[in-house]
Image (cartoon, rainbow, N blue to C red; front, side, top):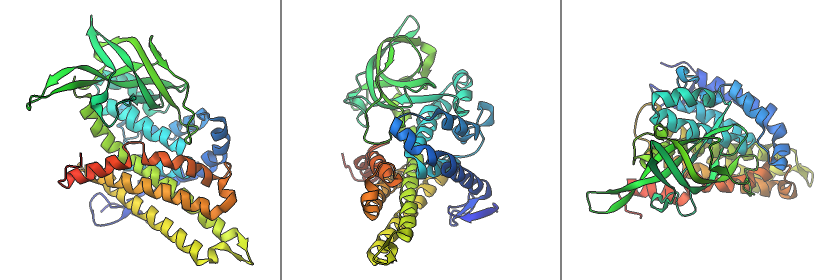
Length: 404
C-alpha cells in the first residue's frame, strides 16, 4: 500500500481511497510555499507591467516544475501527470498567468513532442524545455479555425525536402517570449477522401524553430486578464523548415492534438481549481478581519453561506480533476472525466471570483487586490482549452447524444 500523508486524492492501488501519496503531498506544499513567498508578492507588479517574470520562470525551472511528468533521460523529473496538476493548482492560487505559463508550456509545448516526436526531435528539444530554460507553443487556432479544424487555412507544401508554410495563427500562448525556441504549427498538407466519400483536409503538425525567416510574432494582445502570460498572433510567410520537422504522422496533426488537448484539460482544470481556491482563501481572511457594526462580516449568515458555497465548488472541482489525473496515470479512458473536470472547475473559478469580489465590496474592485485579478483572469477559463459549450458537447456525445 502506498505511504500517504494527506487526504485529497485516490492512491494508485486503491481507487476508492482519497489520499495523496507522500511525494505528491510534499510537492504540493513546496509549490504552495513558493507561490506564497515568491509569486504572490510580485504578481501585481508584473500584472501592471504586463511582463512575463523571467526570474520567476527560471526559479520554476530550477525546481523541476517544467519537467515533472517526463523521463529523466530527457531532463525530466520522472514523476507523473498528477504532480504537474498539483503544481499548476498551487501556482494558480497566487497568479493564473504564471500557472498557465507552466500548464501550456508543458501540455502544449513539450507534451506533443514527447508523445509524437522522433528520438532526434526529443533529444534536440526536450532537455531545454523540461529544464524551463526555453518555452514552446502550439499554433492551432486561426480566425476561422480552432475547435473546427476544417476552417484551417494555413498550408504547408513539400518542396525540395522542405516544408514551405504560409498562414496565420492567433491566441498562441508562449509563442513570443524572450525564451521561446519553438512553435508547433498545424497546417493543411493535402486533402484526403474518407470512406463515406467526403473530402477532408489533411492536417499535419510541423515544428518551427524560433527564429526562422518568414516567421513573425505580432505584438502581444491587449487582454482583459492574464496580463503576464505571453500571447501573440503569428504570421508565416514562405517559412521553410526541413521535412524532418514533421511531428508525428502526416495527416494526423489535428487528431493527435485532440488527444493532447484531452490530457491538457485536466491540468487546465487544476489551474481553475487553484484560482477558485485563491478566491476562497482571500474571502475567508477578509470575512474574519473586516468589521462592520461591531462584528466581522463573516458573522453575517449570508456571507458565511456564500463562502460555504465557494468551498463546495473548490472541493468538487478538485475531486473531478484528481479522478481524471489518476485515470491518465493508470492508462484508463479519461476523455469524459477530463471534460467534466474542465467544465466544473472553470465554472467554479468564475463563480468564486464573482462572489469574492462581492464580499470584498469596493476593495475587490482594486487591481492591486488578488481578488480583482482573479475576477479579470477567470473568464478566459470558460473559453480556453475548449469552451464550456465544447465540454458539454463532448460529454453529451459520450453519453450517446449527437449534440452537433
